[in-house]
Image (cartoon, rainbow, N blue to C red):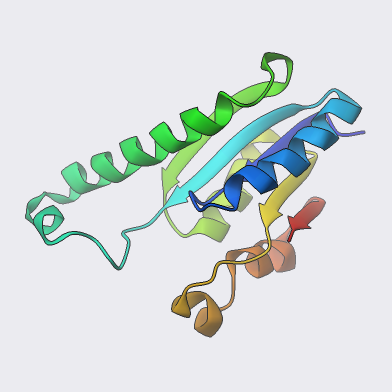
Length: 140
């Protein structure tokens, strides 16, 4: 039933738990797991980062996010390990576009962030679920 699963993670301490749920599904169905992380400029960016050009800052943020994804990917059994996608953009759009490109059978995402902006603007998970063109599992 599920052959290609996109796992959206955000670099938080909850990401391994989201991946754990996705791995259980992958093992049951023999699916491939693809990790996805959207990168935005964080509100708490260090002052020295403001001296970087736009391209340099983007590169630093993407490289850091890829390093996090590499650590998570190392925990996935090789038989289920797929690609790692890391892109600059609004998380919901990055996740939705990655799911379309991969033709993912399922999107797995954590339930919500805990930041102030999440409470005001709504969560990425809510946006993904409300605009999903494929099945989406939200992990609490």
